[in-house]
Image 1 (cartoon, rainbow, N blue to C red):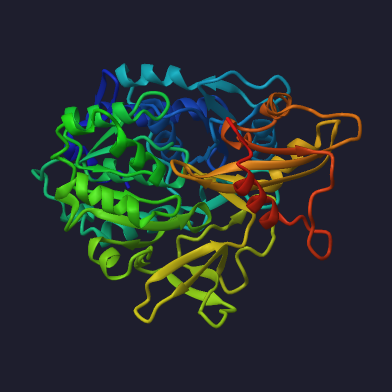
Image 2: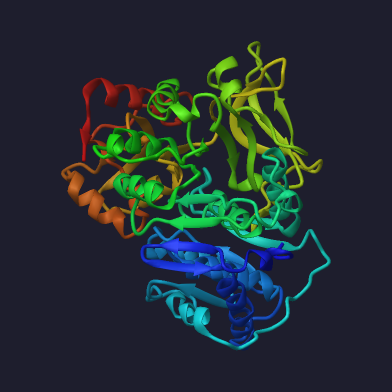
Length: 496
């Protein structure tokens, strides 16, 4: 995928804070780091675990791994030590590159400071030649997603999947590299979602092969920083989850910033409300006719599956659009309204979960997404809930079973149920209902402190129902989460 990128030469490729790295510097660093990874004991086909926040070194680590014939494994930097240890044991990487220390009891592959890769940007060694691989179905990338069964699952994407996803996106937007002249104006993209998500990986690939500039925020999401960067860098494209868009639109600096450069604002990762789209049209008038988009996809699909542009959203409010090229959709077991589980078949679909064969991809290549939806007569997809027990909080997937397992490890808790409740800013927030042993009554603060060592910060519940009575159940003794959700919403519950 790097063929032809040398033509961009002196253009700036990566920006973060005061750091600016041009294409030539980056492309020279890739083979140097690739050679270093092999010198440290990794062999083509081995996995290299990258566990870090967004940075130029993160982007370099991924491309260097590919150059060396290695398989990048991208961990969630917000994980707890327990989750990191689980992921390392599952993937068995040859090396780890991270911006944090290794957990005390983690498995023992060499643990390297990813920040040390910065030196490669200033070196003069030639590095190694790229390691070629003729098997397009060999593993090319491992990402993680939360599943209803609990701990994060390792999604294995083939080399074909990674390439096909880029072809889908660039073909649809008419930006295939061979159609971009050397003197074309440089596109500028702002990335503030984690690069360890499938959408983040797509962004870092797109900008390199198209000669674009990738601007990264520093630290946690900050709406004020986003506005400042759009103005300072002349950002053309910025996308994120709906929560981010809502916070940017509501920020006190919005009206005083020059955002006229912004031409594309795709949203995904969570449902997009009609009200949010109306606010975007009103506050960013250049996007009224073109540039807004609602997308749908998942890690298991290898990236985005459908997209709806401005005209689509006007014609069919609430749609997530029609499939990208080479993606097939069908509805399994539709009811009288046409609603059923969404199935997907595409060359972008995952090879499977590492260490787990649960039938998510069936013998005919259909991915059973666990999402419910319907297709209209023109092939537009509408989402209608999830069959899997997942909460999407500000674009982050939370497996309820994983949270429940952590709560049940507390010595005073005998029952636990985690579920989502509506939140104006985040889309959903995580609630938990627990039953404690007689004679004990742990507080919310005690329970939060207990699970923080077992869960990522976004997986810690913010709404609580704590009591000594059994949780309500349905037939078969399954906890009635619908009743719990209604009770919490009616009574207000507690909230951080």
